[in-house]
Amino acid sequence: MKTHNLEQGTPEWFAVRKNKMTASHAQAIGSNGKGLDTYIIELMAESNSSGEKEQFSNKDTDRGNELETLARSIYELTTGNEVQEVGFIEYDEFIGCSPDGLVGEDGGIEIKCLNDINHFKMILRGASEIDSKYIWQIQMSLFITGRKWWDYVSYNPNYKQSLLVYRILPDHAKFEALTAGLLNGKNQMKDIEVKLQQL
Image (cartoon, rainbow, N blue to C red):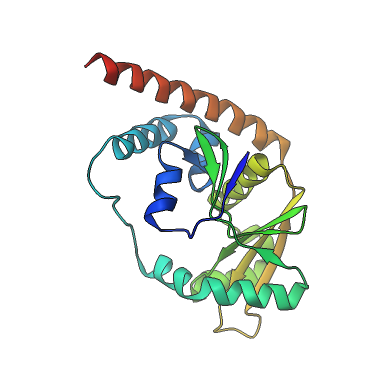
């Protein structure tokens, strides 16, 4: 495992992530079906293209980019946990993750700046409202880093309960699913590389 202290979203960060399955696609990896097949094609198409990386953005991602730094600071003040920012953690040549931060020796943090409706539902219903794709993302980050826990953080300054924190522990059933999906993904990537060399 290798940690790259790069600013996320920079050309250097994209270069380190190139050709790697990442935690943001953990649900597709863990499901190990057509979603994984599609993801591998997209990943290989992107890494073999000479064009610039296409940036995806919408209201949710823009809000997250605006508020994430503030959310991290409020989390530190509220919990007393010091967060270390990292760019990318490389598990091997095929796998990695980009955490929102590492906490001490044992933890990590995933920050989501949810819209009003989704944050309010979480205030009312708690951890049951965490989107399954984020649970998978956190589980893959736990798998890659070997850490003992990960805090899911929802931040929305429009509410009195602006910061919600839920601790997620390793789920070994999900680890097994991820292991199978990652192996399948690696094999698909290797097969594609062989085909490309034959063209």
